[in-house]
Length: 193
Image 1: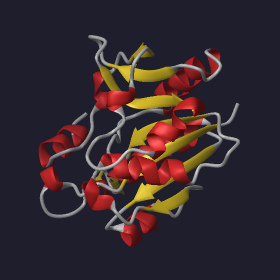
Image 2: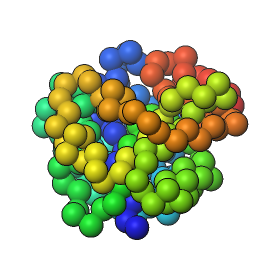
Image 3: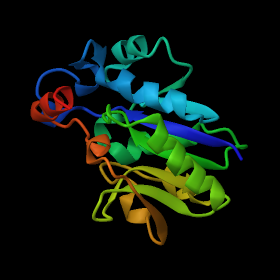
Image 4: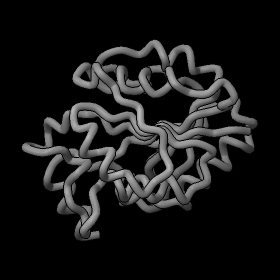
């Protein structure tokens, strides 16, 4: 079974203020590089990173990783458009895809491997997502190949959440791993964990 990671890094970081949150410094390393370190260590067959307006700077931050970089020309339209751009370039032999926001610097390879193993244990036929302690759906989300046409058709701000029906939730015991850096206070929190 071939599973790809699709890391979303094309957002405009509007809530973060000036600058791109994915390039913000977290212990001497950009936020995005922390996320990619976990993804790289998790054992995906391929990793794609969708970039947007800060393509050159993001590409520079990812030089040490083996990734395929996909530039999303319409990055300002929203998450759905970014997902569609990444799914559009997937190789036909991919059996499933994990959609991972690039602003999750505390995510660990262990958690990604647990999600990956759960997805594989169900033969890649069910959606699998990380859940918080209360069972609420969080990211990352693993998608079977059968959902690729719907993911490729997404547009604008609407992400893929509305496509999740029956799915397998994997509760993540450490809530810190599910932190996404949306504003400066999230970055401060990540630095203090």
